[in-house]
Length: 141
Image (cartoon, rainbow, N blue to C red; front, side, top):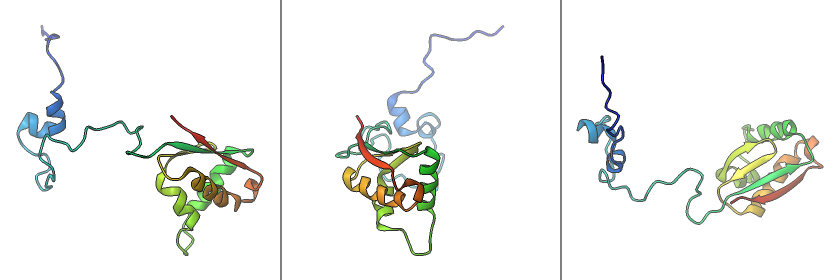
């Protein structure tokens, strides 16, 4: 018969997690060929959830109304394809801060919301079924 100790903790300390389990628990580096650029156990800042945008940036969404999600997906897929002439200025204004696309909603983690909306609208309007679409900015908390 086996006994299980249910009174003990099954987690390492916060410092152990930040240091890395390989060093904290085993005393050796799992990847000795890589150089750690910061002192072990002293991160520059406390890690934040991915839902928190970088300092000074605000989250927003650009919503495309009046057309089907399939038409928006086709237009966006077309805009993302290489054309041999490099990326358009409108694509370069939209893509760097975009996080996700879900249906008719494009989510962003920074950038000028009005400029991004205008650039995305120009990109999508090159696809004929989207010529009559309404494109608006929606603030996110």
